[in-house]
Length: 306
Image (cartoon, rainbow, N blue to C red; front, top):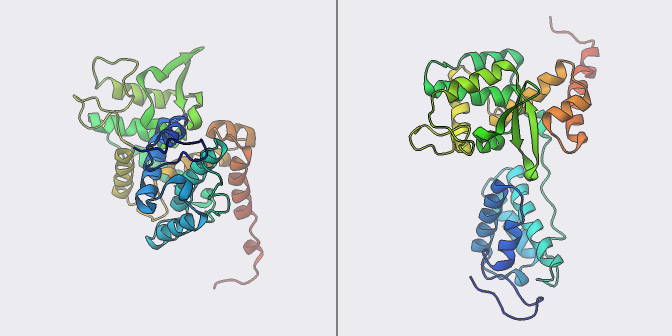
C-alpha cells in the first residue's frame, strides 16, 4: 500500500487498499457490502493499474466494455460500476481527487426484477413438501426454504441470522432481520415456520446467542452457512422436482413470496412492510405488473384457435 504524502488533492491510491479506499469500504454499514466493495475495487485496480487521480472517464468506459465482452449480465455490470461510482464520488467529496471521473458514466439498463420468473403457488407448496425433514440436513434446508418462501427473506439475511435473532414479542414468534444498510427489523413468523426452525435447532448442541442460525454441513465446525451453499441447495432441490427453468433462481423465491402475498389480497402498505422495501415504488411495480397481465388487451382479441 502506497500513498503520495502531499496535499489532500494530490493524495491518491496506488492500490485499492490505500487509506481512503479503506475508509470508504469500512464506512459501509453492511458486512457483506464491505466484502463486495473491497472485491470490486480490487478487481478494477488490478485491471486499470492507475492511481485514483489518474483514472479518467475513458478508463471507466473501457472497463465497462471489458465487462460486456466477458458476457456479464447487465445487472452484474451495473452493480460493479455502481461500486466504482460511489468510490470516486466519495474520493472527490473528500478532496482526494480533483475531478470525479465517474460523473459521466451511465449504467446499463437493467430489466425490472418483478417480471422475473416466479414459482406458481402449487410449485411453492410442492417445493416445501418435497424436502424430507427426517434428516438433520433436511430439517435445516426446510427451515431455510420456509423463511425464503413464506417470509420472503433475502438470501443474505438468512445467511447472516444468529440464534439470538429469534425471540418472542407479546407471545408472537419473531425473527430479527439484519437487512440492507444495517437496518434491523423484526418479522413475525407463523407457528409452522417457527416449528421447522426449532426442529432443526434440536439437532445442534450448546447453542449460544451469537451462533449462526444456520450452519454448513459440518455440524462440528459450526461454521456459518455460505450464501453459495444455500443457492446450490435451492437449485438442486428445485431440479429434483422438475423445476429447472432458466429464469428461476434463489431470488425467485422472494419474488414468488411477495407476488402470492399480493394475489392473496395484501394491500400495497402491507406488502411493502412485508417485503421491507425502503421505497414503496418497488412494491408498486409488483402490483402494476400483475394488473397489466390481468387486464391485457389480448383477452379482447376476437381471433380464435379452432
